[in-house]
Each structure stands twice: as structure tokens, then as C-alpha cells.
Length: 218
Image (cartoon, rainbow, N blue to C red; front, side, top):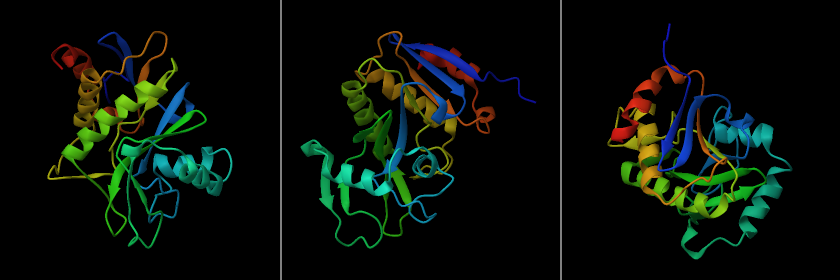
């Protein structure tokens, strides 16, 4: 049995940050879904797993067709620094690469380019990639959020092999997310807030009491 908390509220430089167990799709405001660096939408258990948040979103929560989403992404006017090279060698999926942290707003979802993909369609990230993603992501959310609350998963939980870091836990990832949020310029004005939503099966692996008490030292 766990005597762990299932929700804590933190004050991070004046922004309310709630860390809790729950279902990301049922949160108010913007909900963030991590895509790969191509904004691939192919849910086939090769490119995107049906069980991932990315797959669940496309399968169950996408308003409109996948081809419509693909069309709107490819015609969207991204910033110059968000568009990287086109990978013509890629045989499956899309070829236009986006910089990590790039956001595409799709109604009340923020789709973000999170993971790099190798030529075998395996997601990977290095720790510098992960940090760069977060710093870029908070900066872009800051320009978009328009006083709405934003809910995010623990980025990298369960899907991404972080190179050179074999045993990085969800709690470590959560701490890195909170730390990069704190040093970013992103601030939520009350009542808007940030919620980090953790799957109920994973909440026991995270000591929220520790997160709350360590907050002052973070």
C-alpha cells in the first residue's frame, strides 16, 4: 500500500503548478501531446504506438481526420527557426523535420515536437536534447497560452530512450521539468496554472511529498 500523496500544489516563482495523478485528456484548458520531430500521425505500432498518449490522441480525441491535420500542419506558417531540414531518405512517415519544442495548436491541444527519430523509427533523445526541448517548449507556451491553464504529461516517461542515461526515473524527469520551468520566463497568471498529469499506475513511483518539501531547494 502506498501512503503517498496523489496531488501536490507548488508555487513556482508565483505560478501555481499542480502535480497529480489523472487522465491528461480530461483536464481543462490546453492539453499537451508529445509528437516526434516530424509531427508524424501514423498510428501503426511502428511509427506511433496505439498505447502512447500520441496514439490515444490521434485514435480517440482528434476532431476531424488525420489527413486534415497533416494538411494543416504542412501548410502552417512556422517560425524560421522551427523548420529544420527535409529528410528525403525517410521511407515511412513525413520528411519535414521541426526543431524540438515547436508547437502546433490544434483546438485545445498543443502538439509539440518532442522526440528525435532514428532511421529505424525509434524514438531517442540525449539529455542535452531533453533540456533544449523543455527550455524551448516553455518559451513557446509562454507566447501561446493566453491566460489558459496548460496540462502536460511527464515528458519522456516510458517511451524515450535517453542516451547515456540508463536509469532515469519519472521522478528525475519531473524534477528536470520543474527546474526548467522555474528558470524559464513562463509564468501563469492566476487562475491559469500548469498541471503535470501522471498516469495513475505510475504515481506510486513518484514521491510527491519529497517533491513538495524539496521544492524550496529545487
